[in-house]
Length: 185
Ligand SMILES: Nc1nc2c(c(=O)[nH]1)N[C@H]1C(S)=C(S)[C@@H](COP(=O)(O)O)O[C@H]1N2
Ligand SMILES: [Mo]
Image (cartoon, rainbow, N blue to C red; front, side, top):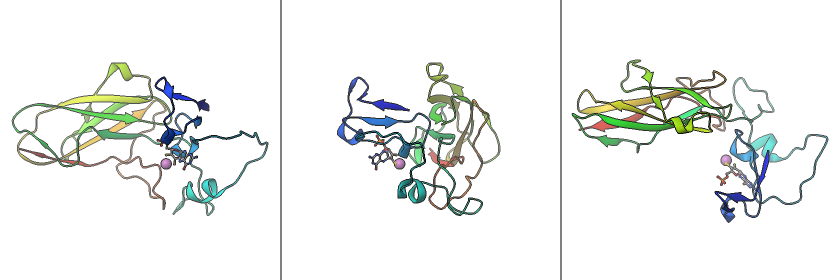
């Protein structure tokens, strides 16, 4: 856990917690409390609506008082608008990012049609071992029309992304494989 006074060498902007905020690497955003006042250390757990009701995992398969939210899940996204238009007849360099709260991303695979044509993406070397992993993959669309792009990552603990995220009522920890539609032509 860090107490951060600066971001990118400058004082924190007010929206991001000036004069000082907590940063808990890898944990969900609510752990990183902004605008920190006096800090008290407690030998016993403290309870508030934030950690008993608003930020817990509720729903089928979770305890009645909710499951804990700690580290972030594995996620991947293409650096493309939803429903992006892609030219036909040429190869395009697809770009995206994956990240995980457990540790570095070790592998990313992409699929460009609805069959399971998974193949490895190229990891950007500068990012390897870091909190984000950028990646690229060349794609020559087979023809004009609607196509679905998918990306899935595996992190250093072996955690990956399921086809469908497991439901919880507040919608936290989404780790499913996103079906990203694009139009070619
Ligand atoms: N004091 C305070 N800190 C807070 C919050 C808040 O409502 N109040 N929101 C939390 C949540 S839910 C998130 S996701 C992050 C967002 O931080 P950012 O605005 O710097 O991205 O701040 C966290 N810290
Ligand atoms: Mo949040």
